[in-house]
Amino acid sequence: MKKATTVIILLITAFIGAMILNLDEFAFGKPANIKNMIVTVLYVAVWIFVLAVTVKRKRRKIILYCSIFWIVTLLSSLLTVFINATEVSANWALPLCLLFLSPFYGIEYFVNNYLSSSIIISVVSLGMSIAAILFIIRINTVAKEPRSVST
Image (cartoon, rainbow, N blue to C red; front, side, top):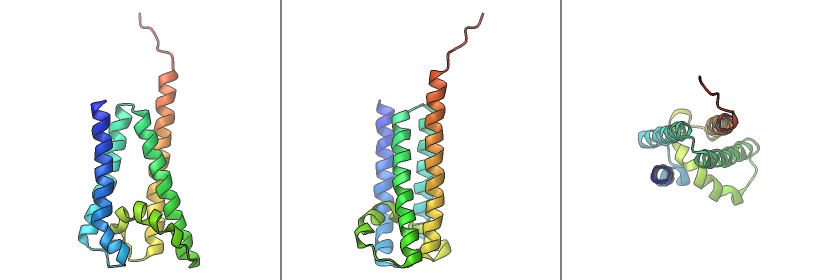
């Protein structure tokens, strides 16, 4: 239980830290800098690390949380793709985007285009969502398989 709590604290810290460190540039439309890029890379690395550790330890609930988080991030980024492609106004989506997309502002360092970065975030989110869901299915399948008795 203690290790699960540590993992959850790590995720929350990574999320809040990345959001705070990227928020100024993201919220005010400033150009992304090297700090934003490093924060984004570390943010994604923490999520990959946590997913790997929780899969190894078969922590279904944490993996489920990860999949839900990445699905919400995917929906936020797809909404941003739609808004940027159609130039529709969606002020109601600003809090959602600030929350889930600001940790990824470092992508702007490479592409400098909101539509392109939203597409990249969508691809990353889709990949992480699919990975988490497949890991949950795999863990559930392995848990249900009967163990063979060796003689």
